[in-house]
Length: 198
Ligand code: SF4
Ligand code: SF4
Image (cartoon, rainbow, N blue to C red; front, top):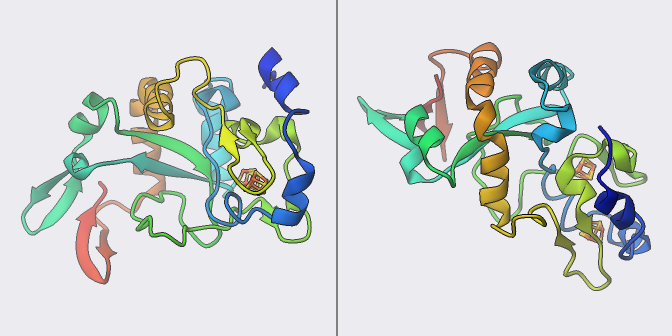
């Protein structure tokens, strides 16, 4: 994937040396970063290969509306997810020990990381150019307060930006769900059988 002129500029901007001391305390240790379809040249085959590599997961920007009740469990409401601009499937780097379809994590304050590409000694094993878009657009700053430029062109907020970039791939990811998810499996939330993905 070719870097945009801005990314070429930003790769040298900020204070990347502070990452050495920080060791990903607020990013890579905490949660694996989000890709954009551009990271795969918009090509479903490349997305598929990434998922097959075992290093990437499918996740969901969700709200309570993403689910509907069926019997005594919840199921994903695919029509609502496609319709709602704040919801949507997307692909991100995988968190260690988590599955390829990683929709049922609990998003608690400890996070779900570390990322599979991260190590305490070496940080991110991917070169800057091969990192997911969120990683490329995260500008490190001393004393925390690192900020991301993911939505730099639209300024619509990170969540809306990610959801809108991935919307055209809703059906592609639905196909991946059927491949990488165990149909009929009931997932537990806080120990209670609660959710079926497909
Ligand atoms: S980007 Fe920020 S939070 Fe992440 S390692 Fe660098 S300084 Fe730490
Ligand atoms: S891909 Fe690299 S930059 Fe992104 S979370 Fe993983 S280790 Fe960090």
